[in-house]
Length: 273
Ligand SMILES: O=c1ccn([C@@H]2O[C@H](COP(=O)(O)O)[C@@H](O)[C@H]2O)c(=O)[nH]1
Image (cartoon, rainbow, N blue to C red; front, side):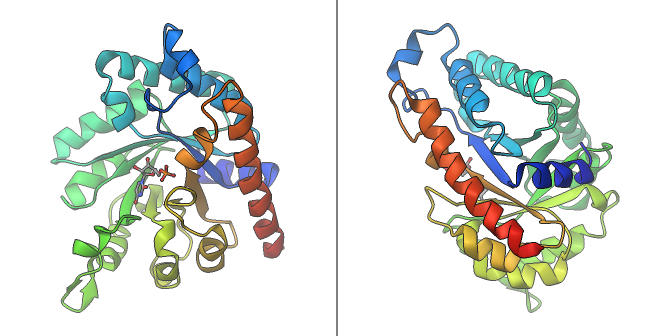
């Protein structure tokens, strides 16, 4: 999917919501455990109930890998279901990969070609040759961890090297990578006040912003400091939406939570005009 197609979808749906499919057998409604593939049944119900309120879904790969072959099969069914039934939706494999060049190429093939995701999250720590193999794929997007939402982000990411914070170095150096036009960045909603500085380095890039909902980040602050004329934001909420209820009404409850966020986003988009 091209970035323009994503922007068009945001305008059409008046939403820049990404729903995280962090599907955990210990948290989904108990009655679904009787199904042949409870993970897929849960995901399908959530997707069918919320697809017109969001522009992206982000399965976190850890939740699928944790269940071995069954989990991987549910992931494959989920991405296939999305690509077949809702081809306009932007899909993100939250896999946080990155390795020496030839290994990165295999990761890229796995997620972009075999699974056919539109994008993947990548850790920048191994540098240029670990990221560029992902950037070589046309109309696929590489979402580099810049400033993450967790407390541990302060261990390294905000530390200065030669007077410059590491996350800023990640942002500016990565813009020189071959294929940098395919880059997006992860910035945690819990670090909204940093967005002003971040926008000085990457004024137009799309940012994937997790941390609204269960982690307490503010949608309003993220929009105030991070929104661009082309929106430039995908705001993720996972647990706050998908686990709104563990009863029969779980999909409707998820829809209500997604609707609350979409309505708040609509107001923010109206401010742009
Ligand atoms: O900095 C980061 C990077 C990734 N995540 C992931 O996003 C979701 C957030 O889930 P919530 O339930 O809405 O808190 C989850 O998959 C994280 O692994 C992040 O939170 N922060």
